[in-house]
Image (cartoon, rainbow, N blue to C red; front, side):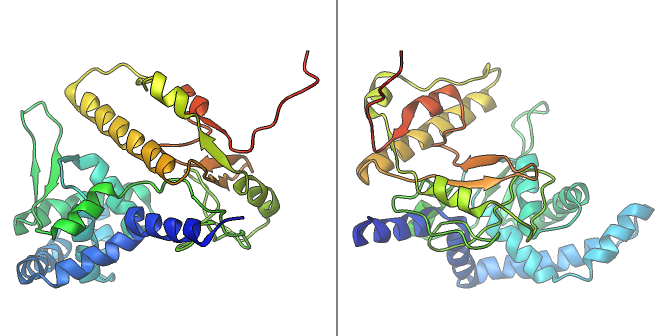
Length: 302
């Protein structure tokens, strides 16, 4: 049974790593900064002017629909999202993330619209869109000033680590098992959320399985990329992923090396473990490092 210490530790982990909570802190920091609020005001004017322009037919239709939305709220959401770009991030990746953040219905139109909005919002000087050479990819980097403590949270924010206490029981299709937020249990591209039948009993059973890291394996075997690194961007991306992964391994070890993975299903009913740096369904290295916490001697096997 989990102790109060496990539960408190889990709540702290979620507060420190979950972007759903950090977004609130970022918005408060932005609203407390007169310079950034002035940039948002300018950004709203720029985006409104963009939407009122005359373009080709499909773009006009798309922008007419955007004028019906809350433009100041959209600009604020983009500024909050940009705050996570403390180091240069790929423009294509950022616009894709922003389109998901703004929850537009059409994915292709959403990415195109966000890219056009960010192109004009760049004029506020809240962020920069640059490329090192004519052949380089466009990169986005934030210029919004944030308190040091908040910057540390932003730098650590990422996919949530496994739970160090037993997940909450899943009682409906929009529940996660985590203590401080809910989420759709239907995962995968093209798998919209629904309230139909899901095998919640199976997911609850899998969520309750206690796991641990094979620390001896992690100390002796170094994680290697599963792809050929062909350029500096890929090298930097792998280095960041590896650094974050080992940070997560260390975090789990410090919390007693006992944890739970949560699970979701796709539209076919297949079950997937939720985890980025620690996952039983990842690359061979990731699979090899995770073991059952409650070990039993296997008998009767030839």
